[in-house]
Every structure is written in structure tokens, then in C-alpha cells.
Length: 119
Image (cartoon, helix red, strand yellow):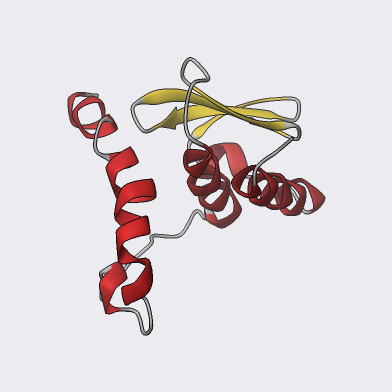
């Protein structure tokens, strides 16, 4: 049975493939093979297809799937200017969730940093 994160990923993939952008491969950037897209994410090879997302050796938290699916849904050709940046803690009413966010999201992203910097 899929956990709630996996359900979110499947919902995001459904939205992506229901209205698949023509230039998604270019925007990721990556390569398209039919309905499959291959690109680098978190220092690993990533593959998106309608049935799911594969990252590296396949042993990854479903949080990565959420981040990757959101990235694919929002990949654009125009330049992204993410200013002003905000910390998670700066959002209203987020304080009760800071511990969970740190444990389940921030700490998962720490190990790939070295691979990304070297790649």
C-alpha cells in the first residue's frame, strides 16, 4: 500500500502527464524517450514516467519523489528568480512543523550535497 507521500507523487504525475509540456525534456534538462524523461537530480540519475519516479538505485525516501514531481510540474524555460528567499520557519503558523520538516525533509537532502557539488 502506498504511503501518503507516494499518493502525492502519483497525483503530481497525473497532473504532469494530463497536460504534458512539449519542451519538458529541455526544461528539466534531460532526455525524452517516449513518455519517459531522464535527467540528473540530487547527484543521481532520475527517471520520470507515468507510473512513478526512479532515482539512482531506487532506494530513496518518497519525499524525494514529491520534490522531483513538483520540480517537473514547474520546470520552465524562462529564468527563475527566487527572490526574496524565505526560510520554512518564516512562514506563518509553521513553528509546530519545524521539527518534522527538519527530520523528514532537510536531513534527507544533506547526503546528496557532496555529489551535487562534485558533479
